[in-house]
Image (cartoon, rainbow, N blue to C red; front, side):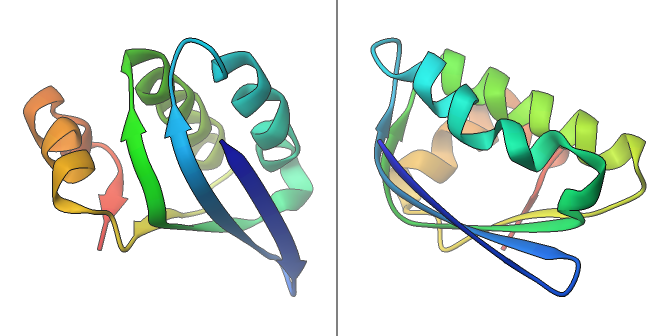
Length: 100
């Protein structure tokens, strides 16, 4: 999993590339940890190149959503491929996290 983060005007843009699974979940958490800080603002995650997420990846997204909500900011996941979106739908995460 490759994570690229760009910050601008109170907003963080994140670009994901690859799979989130048990082999790299700790690294993914380390990569997104700055997004859980108060100064991160709103977060827009481009999932165009995210090919898979395991339950551990879902847990990381939930942690991020809770952090963003607690500081009254917004988290949006964009451009999710149908297979990954199905995982979010089946698990109910698409009711918790905004996906467009």
